[in-house]
Length: 215
Image (cartoon, rainbow, N blue to C red; front, side, top):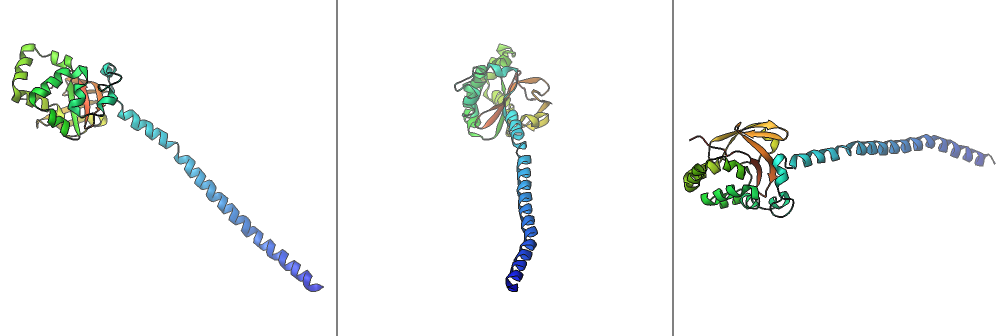
């Protein structure tokens, strides 16, 4: 009869010894899960913020953006699907620029070149030039090409790159950009009135004054 008692005592002692180990293991598992949960929950809030920043930076900005059509090929969404010369041709405010690009024979160059920045003068910008002078430039293909390529940079610029920039154009001379936020100027003379407009191959900054390269 003594042997069964010893056996029961041994079982009880063994169980008592194993219980703390079992509890410790459960505690470790729980801690691991808590740590993973904490780590996961702490990482989540940054995602929406980062997405919002990216979204904000990608939006067009400027006082003239309100005149861009809300729908169709001339809208921001429509322009983003076409190469830059085609996209500009669908924007009524850029019709004089499009006429000049066609006269200079630059449509294919602009449409078929990747990663461009185009400073696009509005119709009102061209209207600042006396008509006789504008007609003369439009009739001189060499001079017209020089002026138009001075508005093109072979790099796709984000707004923040223009805060204090100096960039070589397709015409080979440089343009200066300055500003911040949603207010930028080119060569301290031409204001960006609608910036960061996306086309399939370029970023477009619509400006209020035609840029003139040094002769």
